[in-house]
Image (cartoon, rainbow, N blue to C red):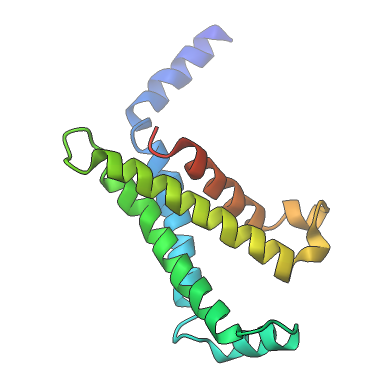
Length: 146
């Protein structure tokens, strides 16, 4: 078993630097695409949906969600780009990553509570992409660029 583990370490070690980027690119792209899908803002279908649930100022809510998703997705990727110690903006990249991860977490908690409240602690929740987006957002909010 130890030999096999050592073999896997040797195979994986050249890819360790890109491993966090697999998460960043996936999460960032997903959030950017979800946000752009709500453009032009405010998206009329979403406004009607929020109105049907009795939310006040649905145009503002929909616009904030769309812009927030695009900004948070871009922030996850930009924060990683700024994550080089030789870079003047190094500490800002860490902050941008953490803030973007926090924003993603807040957006996903809101999505779960508003759009999928019937999923809370059910099989549907753990079979959906939403739980993974929330988990990745929390990961970057906690870890930042570390």
